[in-house]
Image 1 (cartoon, rainbow, N blue to C red):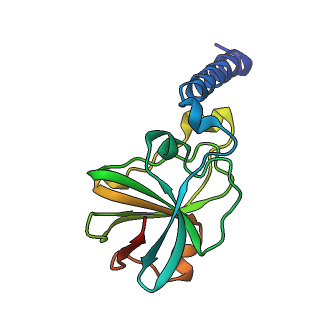
Image 2 (tube, one colour):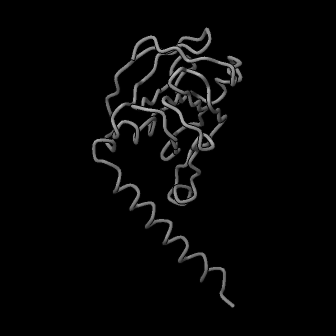
Image 3 (cartoon, helix red, strand yellow):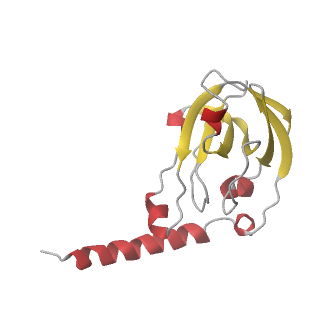
Amino acid sequence: MATRAQVLVPVAIAAVIIGAVGVFTIPSDSKLAEVKFSKGTVKIDDIVLNVQIAETDAQKIRGLMFQNEIPYDQGMIFVFDQEQVIPIWMLNMQFPLDIIWFDSNGNVVHIEKNIQPCKSAVETVACTVKNADGKQAKYVLEVTSGFLDKYKISQNSKLQIISI
């Protein structure tokens, strides 16, 4: 029978290798300490948010990675050309998020609350990807965890794009 060390050492090595491969396959412009995002404004129900806009593939991959927690009047909106299943991962996040998926008409299609970051190589391997339960969306909004409860955002809420 294998000892605990004989089992855990290969698993740990595999986790580090997979984590390293994941980091090396991220596009180089999304690895930079400062990725530039356009700014815009959106409104959910009566709540106005200043948002960073993730439009390019590199911006979408980078997202809010490595950023410090943002205030409740800020967020990041991911904009896609058409409605599709949009997975979100929490790699290298520094704080938990509430995430809302919207269709092209600004209707909520899915909500996830208090999604925790994945910071270590081992967590990266097991990091859960949220994909709105397979529902299609055109926009994804990431806000600091607690936003949804604080402002009573629900499945009946509506996104209005003011400027992006």
